[in-house]
Length: 94
Image (cartoon, rainbow, N blue to C red; front, top):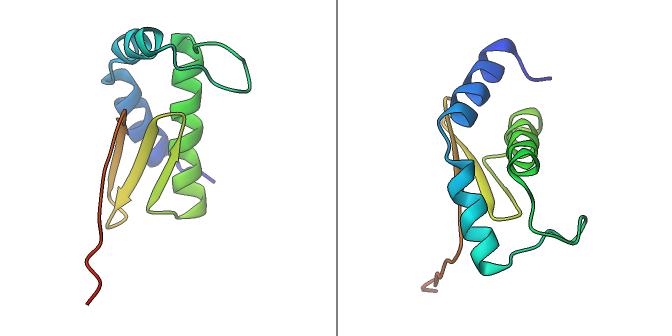
């Protein structure tokens, strides 16, 4: 269950996130969501982000991602949402 404190944090993030800009990027890249077969509109992006943030909170998962969005919880107090277009990483095995 998502408490009122977490709901307030989610609302703050959503109010301060530029979904219009994400929509422009996705339109430019022709980035379609498989379940709708089209570039998602702003309302769909907000719903995806909300579901992702709530999922991280309710499952106590530090990191969740879907549809370009990434939600993170650090130290059970910092909730972050970002949109990732590309990433590269490597691991050094010793």
